[in-house]
Length: 404
Image 1 (cartoon, rainbow, N blue to C red):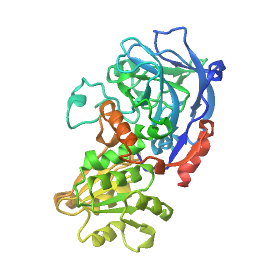
Image 2 (cartoon, one colour):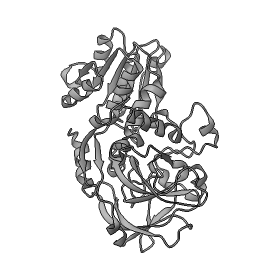
Image 3 (cartoon, rainbow, N blue to C red):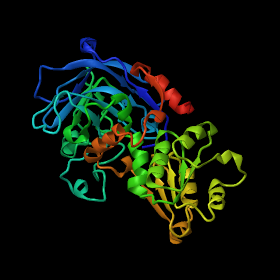
Image 4 (cartoon, rainbow, N blue to C red):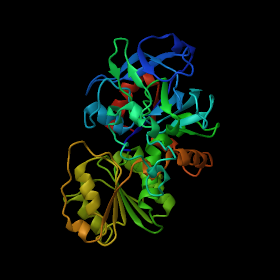
C-alpha cells in the first residue's frame, strides 16, 4: 500500500497462548465453547507504543474464519494510524499483511478448512457484487475505505469488510482494522477476506504478498500495464517501491529510474532491476525537471510510492506530455489536497491510483504464491529484519528510520 521497509514479526505460537486473559475479540457461534486466549499488540492512542495485551478470541460466526497468525509484516499504512495521518478509533488492533493457518471455521465456510495455509485479505473479494464481477475494479465500493473500522459490522458483513468486534472486560470497544487485524496471535476474518495458498509455502516469506509486494508489483503490471521497452520512474524505495521495480522489470521496461533521498537504498534497487538511481538532494533543480531532461521529454510511466503530495505532483510532472501515465501507490495523507497545473492533464498525461496492485485477492494471491514457489520473483530482498512479534515497537522504529 505504501513505501516501506518490510519488517517480519513472527514468533512463538503455542498452547501457552491459551492460558492468558484480557480483551475479547468476538467472533461467532459455531464453536461457542472454544474461546482462544492469546496476546495481541493493541494501540490505545496516537503516537504511543503498542501494548502487548492478553485477549480472548471468540469462535468464528457464519462465513467467518479464525486464523492463527504465523507471520506479519509492518506496513507504512499501519504507521499512518499511529501518527494520526489516518484517523481511526482507539483502541485498535492494527496489521493487514500476514499469513497463517486456519484454526477453525464458522458455518457455511467452503473455501478453506482447519489446517489450510492462508493469507488474510484487506481487500476482500465476495465474488458476487458488481465490483467483484467487474473486469476493471479490484475492491468493493463504497465499502472500501481506509477507515473501515468505523463502519457498521452487520451492514458490512455481506461485503467481507468487517468481521466481529473487540471489547475489553469493561465493555470498551476495541476496533478491527481493514477487516484483518493481524497484530495478534489469532484473528477472525470473513471467508471472502481469506485466500488459501500452497501448503508448502513459507509463511514468513509469502506474508508479503498480503500487501507490500502485491501492491507494488501489481501497480506496474495491473494498473499501469507497463509495456516492453518503456521508461519508468519509481519514487520511494521501500518494500513497495522495490516491488514496483520488479514489476517494471518483468513487464520488459528498458529503463527503470529509482528515486529516493536515501542513497543507501540504491544497491538493492539495482539488484532488483533499476537501471538508474538518483537522489533529489544531489540536484539544484526540481526532480521532475531532472527526470524530464534525463529521458528526453519525460518517462512513460511514473510511480509515487511514498504518500506525499509533493512527490505525487513531481511524479506526475515528470511523465511525457503526450502519453505519460503516473500511478499513485503511496497512501495519501488525510485531509490534504493536491495543487497542480491542469495543463499537465490537458496535454495528454494520465493520473491513476492503485489499491493492492489492482488484484482481485482471492483469485490473485494463490497464483502469486505459486509464482513465488516457481521462483518467478523473489521476496527475500524485501525482508530487512526478522523479529519476534513482541518487539513490534522496535520494528516500527526500524521502519521509520529506513534502516536496511
